[in-house]
Image (cartoon, rainbow, N blue to C red; front, side, top):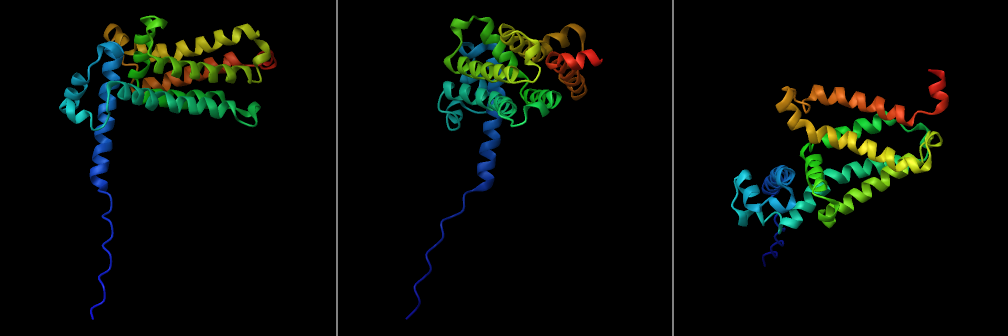
Length: 224
């Protein structure tokens, strides 16, 4: 009697197809980030996003089931890594050894990967806080809360009054967001692209010096 045939193994996932789907999703996110930055959540349409990627709108729904889910994915992709960096700094066991410049470098590197995201945030905030989508409001609140904890837990916090901590957070927010938000206008006005690798490196060094100065302890200032 012939031996029973071995059960057929389940086919392995189609890795190339999956990778293609992931690449398409990234392209959709890039296009959506740009459109949301240009027109805001209300003004951007899935039809325009799909057209930029070379898809029909129904095909876009295979990746993101709604405009809201696409917007959420754009925010998650851009803001979550920055929150992770701030959380890591806040929860560091030895806070005295935190490298402020390294934190700035990591943050600038992350934001530099999605330079339209600060424009998106600025576009929505300029329309007034009442009009912020709940999702964006939550992300901004979480980022501000972590940044406040970072300031409050720093070794140099004693040189600032507690009621100045929120102002320090706002200052850092405007420095980072403002640089990327103004980049496209600055290029039109002065012909200088602020988003080139060289320009970003220069600005990162400057931001590192600036933030380090804000967190510098009085004893360090006196020795200079």
